[in-house]
Length: 304
Image (cartoon, rainbow, N blue to C red):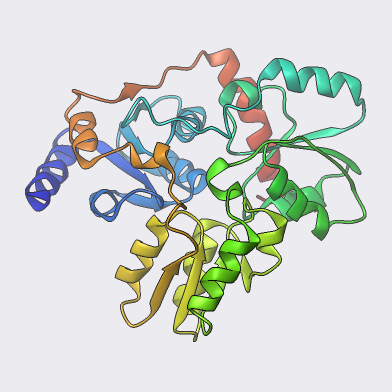
């Protein structure tokens, strides 16, 4: 039974000095055994201060890389080695290096949803919740924003005084949502507030009552006096909010808002990773780690 496997994971993680991180897009059964749940960057910060010597990341590869970047002394395990991120893998170091050379004077801002290798040629990192604040704080007026064009468009609208070069890329799960999906959901639930992630298209975010990160969406829904919500991000958030706020109603924007890379990680994967029989240990050459972590340090410097 699920409960039995969860109990064994809880026992093993104490015995083997393991900290479990679960991104909010994981299923409830995985989040229940995690030491920390939340957005990717916040989890890597939690891992840095956690006392355990081993960290199991229940998320996707770039998240495990970020944990390793911030906690090089720890053993970091990606619970399922097949859990990648299409957005993080859309652009490579060579492409962005060439773009920088062709646009001298521009500051390259990288969404945290990028590989460690790509971060080595970027200047500043941002999260979905800090992107507007960081881009506004950057001294440079000219910004190359990668890789999510939808998040970049959202940020650009908030800071019209700066010049943004947006590179076509993004989250295929969020990007496939359309205005028609929103109108259909609103028609089905006319009294519900619409909460959406900025990785969605502008035609979708323009119809939102709130635009924000995964954690921002959850916080808004929990604190709001409203009783019904349409959730415009991965459908796991609908499930989590139903547990947290049983007196409220939550509806998915679409049944297709599912990240297959997130869903590939199972409770059994977590069990195998905790007992040292599964997952993938994340290795990172120190020179690359130091080069990649610089853009995160810049984010912190600017208030991220």
